[in-house]
Length: 261
Image (cartoon, rainbow, N blue to C red; front, side):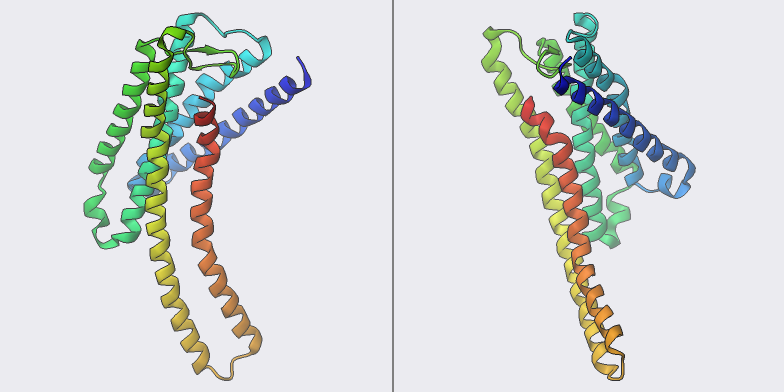
């Protein structure tokens, strides 16, 4: 193994450990906190966590084996099953994050109607769609033998070894990623920009009240006035930072997978 392969192998091991610890922690919080279990977003978080855990346990160790051995882990049938799982779970994770953003959009923009619009039954229907969507694309890829071992990625994933069906595979890949990654990204941007708009509106209202109070309190100490103004600035930046982090995390996690495939 050369230095690059050693670094990649160590990186994969680190990612496996971090992914296991973080997702197990989410499961523990879900199991031991009844308040989280009662909330509708808990179902989306639970689905996302299970997808991440299964990817960590079922797919990433195979990638590590492929890196170390420079060969396909297991037989062709085993690799096809692993590639099917990778495609299914990755798609399900993207759609779960989009579902979470829709839930937050309804909760913030329509707070009075949230409990009537987003019930556990509605969340189950959304999750049913994410599973059907993920299963349909994964099944098509598996039936057409478009999942298998790819030497460049050292993993069992979407690939087409036959030149005869190259055009069909390209069309499928573009269609697949347009209706999973791109669709999820558009949903995230639309919903969180709406949430940010509401957050900024409320910040402006709070700022007006704060400034009116500062004007009335003429004998207030200058340091207190300065702290109030700094808190206004932090309040305006907080929502933008959180939303940017969420969308940025989505891009950081899934864009490399989509671009390489």
